[in-house]
Amino acid sequence: MQRILQISDTHLGREPGPIRPGYPDSDHQLARVLEALVRNEPRPDLLWLTGDLAEDPAPEAYTRLLDLLDRHVPGWPLAGLAGNHDEWCDLDRAFTSAGHALDGHRVRGEWLLVGVNSAVPGQAAGRIEPAELERLEQVLTRHPAHWVMIAIHHPVVPIGSGWMDRIGLTNPDDLFAVLDRHPRVRACLFGHIHQDFRSERRSVELLGCPSTCIQFAPGSERFALDTEHAGYRVLELHPDGRIDTRVERVPGAGPEEAQA
Image (tube, rainbow, N blue to C red; front, top):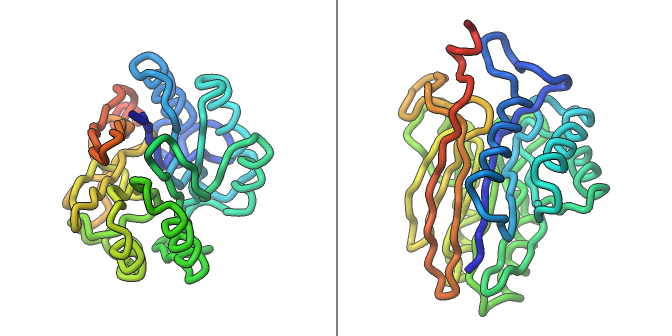
């Protein structure tokens, strides 16, 4: 069995501290989540960071991110994705220099894990470019005997929040056209939505993750924060293609406490 941990939307600023007035300190929030992972979860086969790792494109934010990871989860296998707030080149440079993967794919036992880039410079919504779709197609074709889980930053289906559904993935049909040709695809992880989400399409689990920073209120037509705590997702991937998954919350400062 493979154990995957997902964290998302860390939103580290150019300097430590809240990224907006009334928000909690993003660095402290991430540290609290990492401490909970070490305390409560066995060492995973992969810790997957699914985008919006910085609030603004800032190399110094990625340096602090890697320092926090090295301090709290030294030696853990890591992979990352860029989100709409990230600068892909800076993030790739930081991850590569630290020996971690951005996007790409990896085999873990009977499972193939594929990171897909959906970030579009200067845009909140996401899109998977033709070259990235072709790479995904080629990777899946080369591994027909493996079960597959992909990760992407943007949600691939509407989540029922009007404002967020307008800035999700703009070409999901292109993605599903690829996935539908490969029956061993079992799950698609994503971030961006700052909340727990679970749905299914043609036996493929669609799984959204809370943020380590602040949470968005589910079902809201306009931008609204939730009072839920930060969280992370745990996935247990079985050799027969089954997936057990849960979201864990980590008590800490929310928007209200941060304003006090």
